[in-house]
Image 1 (cartoon, rainbow, N blue to C red):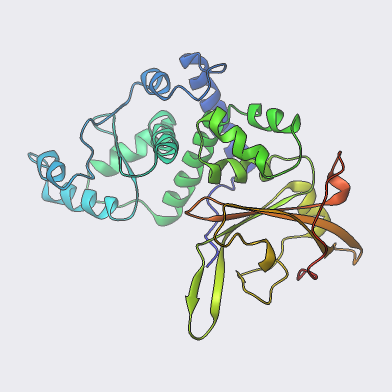
Image 2: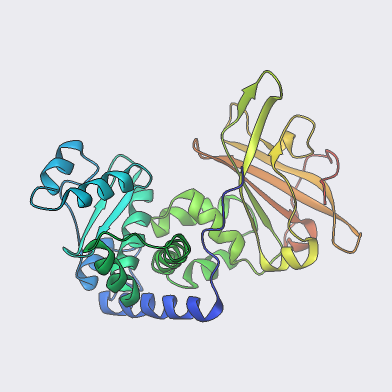
Amino acid sequence: MIRPDDSSLDPADLRAVEGQARRLLDRADAWNEFPVPVNDILSAAKVHVAQVGAFDPAAIISYVKGKTADTGIRIKAAISKVFGVYDAAAAVIHIDDTVVEAKQTFLKLHEVGHHDLPWHRKVFRFFQDCRKTLDPTVADQFEREANNFARFLLFKDRTFADNAADCPLEIKTPITLARRFGASVYASVREYARTNPKPCLVLVLNRLEVAESTGPRATVRRIEPSPSFLARFGRPSIEAVTPDHPLWPVVPIRRRMTRPMSLPLTDSNGLPHECIAEAFDTTYNILILLYPVSALNTTRVFVPPAGDLPS
């Protein structure tokens, strides 16, 4: 199942979030530090990460001592669904340290967003001190705002996009940049597509699964088109990649990457385009990058066409 939108914001809201993130990068003097200096960011935001997170069962018991029973219930409910928790009253962030380091980095920056965005901190403090719960619509807005706050810090506004523009249009580019910025490959490939001036599309697939009724399939987790891809081709309606799908030969099976393969794709006006697809297996997800040959600046060798994609 395709995940719900986790980042779209109204332009005015996005400007407010990015403006606050920009000021935090200024305070931390972190613009030219790679990868992102998380500790400097935390210090500038005046928030710290708990030495023993609330995700430790023993820490949960210790943490809620002296607090209301309702506080403990909310904390337990929260950590069963997420990997990071922000305690507004104590200016403390709790992070699940069992996840990979790159994901911990994003989680910390996300929770810093809840703390550093003034309207978040005020609302979180209010709801933490009473028995009310945050309206789901507001909670979803706050999560998308915190995600964009973290993105801005992690990728230094347009720095990632500018670096990517100097490199070939290929999946190796965001994979390489991920190490420089201290980001996960998953986040970097998504950022690569959404900020790319060239037409390209990233499909994030879940791990391959095999069912007796359907056979092998990889369901689509997210679809990230670049603005120019969306304008030219629209958003494809793909729920899963199966052996009869044109993208199936691109799916890495018992290997980390697949060579670029040629595929025909029809644009929104019904015009055909030769496109290239290549993929990388992160072990958590399968990432497919698709782009028209016309977007390339160099000559590359591709595997012959494998069929047409659905519009």
